[in-house]
Length: 209
Image 1 (cartoon, rainbow, N blue to C red):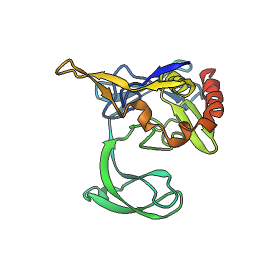
Image 2 (tube, one colour):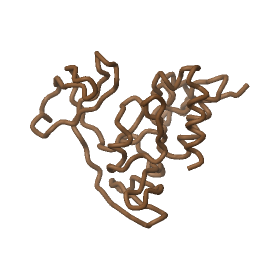
Image 3 (cartoon, one colour):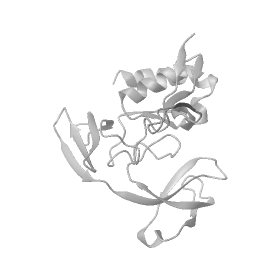
């Protein structure tokens, strides 16, 4: 029996929880090989270790409405033009089926990524670069920010016994169970037993890149 202990939520997310030692692997626009994005001194730095392409970009934010469509049930994200930044709630059309949805206007780090707050990891990516560890299962994106994240997904799907993450309160030193750990954000299709073999095949193929 393979045992899996979850990690605290946001361990593999970017944005306001970004840690300086985290790396996001992306496709280099110059040579199509793997480049790395880091967040250091309030700015993003991109480096490709193959062709030595580099880029520096200050941390930027975006105003958007992000919801799950009430009709097609797909997650979507619509970025707002400056004249709409003042609103707290807006009606926006789902980019997948054009259904009108109502959602809160949010201001977030432009490069924020996690499985719950879905973006298109091919067209948006980090700094506009597609994620390097990216594939699809029935048109649904499967991706990892880096090799550690990729291994986490494999361990989760392979596990026979899954346990919640244990978190230490930095103020009191007490430990508690994180009911909504990192795996809470995974989409339903990644948790279905019927997809287990297909998902593992895709993820292990990404490991060989």
